[in-house]
Length: 562
Image 1 (tube, rainbow, N blue to C red):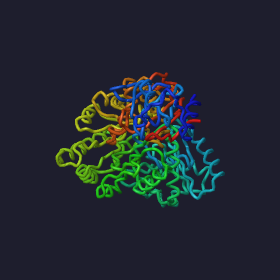
Image 2 (tube, rainbow, N blue to C red; image 1 turned 45 degrees about the vertical axis):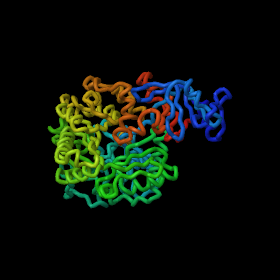
Image 3 (cartoon, one colour; image 1 turned 90 degrees about the vertical axis):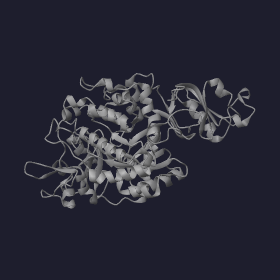
Image 4 (cartoon, rainbow, N blue to C red; image 1 turned 30 degrees about the horizontal axis):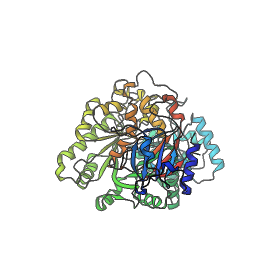
């Protein structure tokens, strides 16, 4: 597969022509730079959902249609690329990810797939013996499938590493466990109170167990060494390379410090960051957008025009804010902000045309998001806004009361959802929520039916960040072993054509870029993803086992599978 593709790409790099005499077109002004055919092509454009060939000139699509039509655009300098049976799609965009976190995952202790507390302990021992670090940091564990059926504790870590501070963040990024040495260095003891929006878990004796939830995680932030510019550049570059290899042409980058914006613009300019990045910055840096306005890198690949806010925590760590208590614990979750703190930001954002993308997972969190958005939208009518339709987003939209679903369309709110959450959470969400609240949970099809745009993402590094897993989850709603469960609402799986739009056209719309990106349409930027499998026809179980074979941004190949 793709051997011919690789050979023809080599022709592109060398600047040679493979066109035959009869293919050559007299007028070089009409010739394409690149023509692609040789496999199924799906456009995400309802006017022409499928095509036989595409032609690219100056980084944009100049032809989409039959192979015969594309052949007429082949000239002496045209490179013809054969898909060799691979399937071609508009460039896939991850509508919710954390770029520096993805790079950090690749460069530090990765605890994805940890099978138990004992497994974690052995992994820590092995890592510490190979890496002499003053603080051991790792991420990616999740306890919901462990035989111990509990969170890890500081005493678990103390048993293998008592003398080096250890901080291990849960996969969702909303909880961590630290050992006793770390607690000692941070000055945390039984008398320490959790900050607003956080929790310090304690045992029956009132002793902290080492588990810190949401805002309480900040109590250990001072232990981490200060990040250097070189560290950040490496994280971002590695993340870009990983995403290009997976087949992503773009990412909506969430909770971004302003220093990362500047680094991304520089790295994109030098060619080290190859994918497109749409930034939603941390609220602490919001004034930089409010004063300076939206910004775009010189090459147009790095766009910054949104802020990211948090309403509540995560479901797995019981931080998601629920209308009624959890079914398996005496808590209703956590709010991470207040109305008094948030509404002034919302008012300024809607007046100045800054997009707001707010994390909300629990049904109470999502209802409050709608309430606060609605209050500000009613207070500041469209004629007084910099952008009449601000396209504010709900990041996750995970557990929603069915009564609230119609409100999204009425308010023009975009739902940003991550299908892989559903196929992981299905193993614990019924215990957290009970049967009744599973109606309206991970309800992709219900939102689409109501007329809401659903921008699909992965939330990596919370999840792996593989577009094939996300597409599989969206259309099949089973875990990677093929399990679903009787109560997991199979009717919320989406059609393949809608799943394609969730990762192409709808993320473009969610970032004000639908005129430039999101479909294979004449005039748009030539962003393309080719997979080794036909997503629109393949058996669902085969999809996660496939791979990307080519990733193209603006007519330039940024990844090609050997």
